[in-house]
Image 1 (cartoon, rainbow, N blue to C red):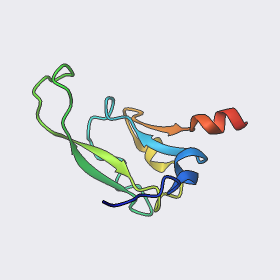
Image 2: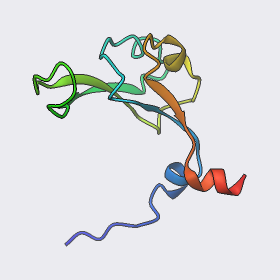
Image 3: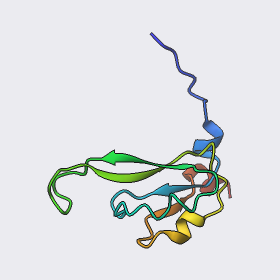
Length: 97
């Protein structure tokens, strides 16, 4: 059995603001990927619930941001035509501020 460290990436997950992609809004156009200077954006196949349009259940491509590479330059957020990339502030940071 593999034992994982519960504090691994604690700083990144709970103390840093970061860019996240909202897969419900994203249309998979790919406009965010070419503008990233560090190539931190990659696409993955997302299978939406059947109740979301177009209700086909077929996989769609959605962006995934590699936080180790991301410089938080916000170019992807500015380039997104659907405003699907948002700035996420962890709850702990909201309490501490």
